[in-house]
Length: 230
Ligand code: ADP
Ligand code: ADP
Image 1 (tube, rainbow, N blue to C red):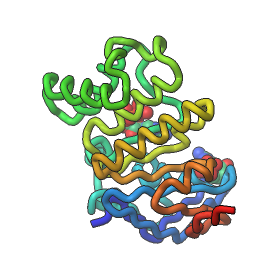
Image 2: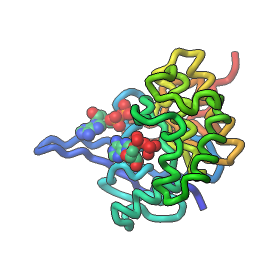
Image 3: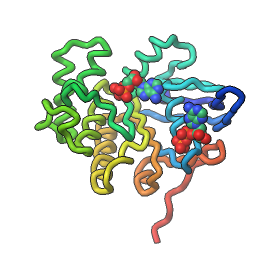
Image 4: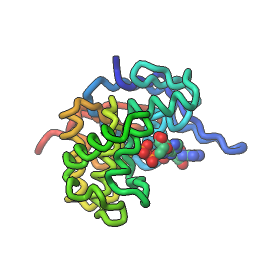
């Protein structure tokens, strides 16, 4: 089964009498372990699509299945639990909780999933080491660099061994060199754990390192082929 399957997906934002149709009739299937980039102009609807795939927003048409489960058939609580178990999120801004240490931040999704403190701590510290933050476990986000914060966010996204990580410009706030490092790290970890990745990025250089590049343009998704080397 695909880790994520969207069928006939549509979204129109409605505020009062203002209606903003973003897209309609989108189909997308992400296989286990597959990495997919979504590119497109600003305002094309990339974040909207990612929010729908992650069950953070409700589609106006069609539906999303995560790990074989239809999101629209679940209660809010069930959807939240499925999201915490099956998906990991990495945003442009790290969203770490400022009053907690890196270790506590990464443990949090495991505790939310109902597991005990000891295994949560073990898995969180193991992943923090894997992202190169073994020496920063007790640091709070304010004591970490931008790149370190994003690496902690990557560890948090992976700690529940999700089927798929959804990233919305996860390296968009970093300088080019740090961005490339964090990006390579995400790819490495995803390959290692066979975790799928759906990544919104405006950086085509990064996008073409993934298995598939889809462009969202005028409400449609089309696959781009790699630019041929000069
Ligand atoms: P992208 O991520 O490609 O820049 P978005 O998904 O953020 O695009 O936005 C797609 C369109 O939907 C834009 O026209 C944007 O203004 C509109 N939009 C996004 N979020 C909302 C919202 N919460 N309410 C109304 N319109 C929105
Ligand atoms: P995480 O779940 O990775 O710890 P956050 O702290 O950013 O990430 O999010 C906390 C919770 O809020 C998560 O369950 C996440 O799915 C949800 N969430 C994050 N962003 C949004 C959003 N824009 N709209 C609705 N829910 C969101």
